[in-house]
Image (tube, rainbow, N blue to C red; front, side):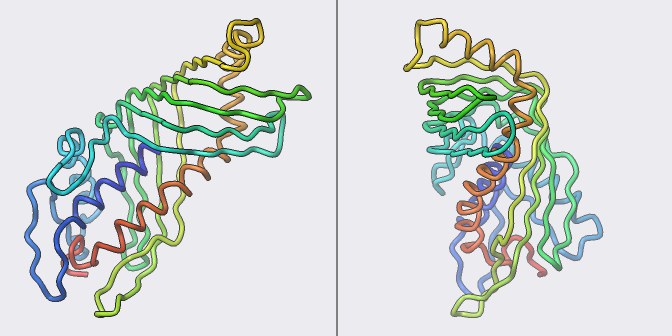
Length: 254
């Protein structure tokens, strides 16, 4: 979700310029322009994303771009119906810190087909919020609701966008996201929950121990559901930005 958040803020920054057909657009200080014809376009885009870091950290109030640190998400719902961990987990009022310390790794594009792939590395991410979990672990029913905290170290994320071109009623060309895929790899991690249902009893503490002692297996089981939920959540926001962003703005020679 951090990766998608960075993509969203990047697009909002560019699309904040007023759009009039055939207008020549000024380049704000926080954008390093790239050209489709550049033989090193991938390197240029990487520099653009990394150049944005200090601006995204503080936010840009005059164009209504919020800080990505903290990054806030209202709701994420993950549902896993297979394997030993069959649960529906709802997370809400999520606050994530540490996203502004990102660095962009490799970027690979095929702009003729509107395909963009990129990797991001984050040294430390802290996440907190509220959760509601209902389901089964092995053969045992689980019902838990409350507050959660998590720390992730050495996070590697990857995103892949498949876009399609379309024109508005004035013939201005845009790109819309058709598919968005998210993946991630976590280094060390630590979880803590305060279970309102089982708080203060042996079940509540046992759940904390279970989460941390089996974090690798839990993440492996829930990862497909997590990546789908994150991609679905951010696809709408990214498209909202893309449909305000004519191709000529972010690719002047497209």
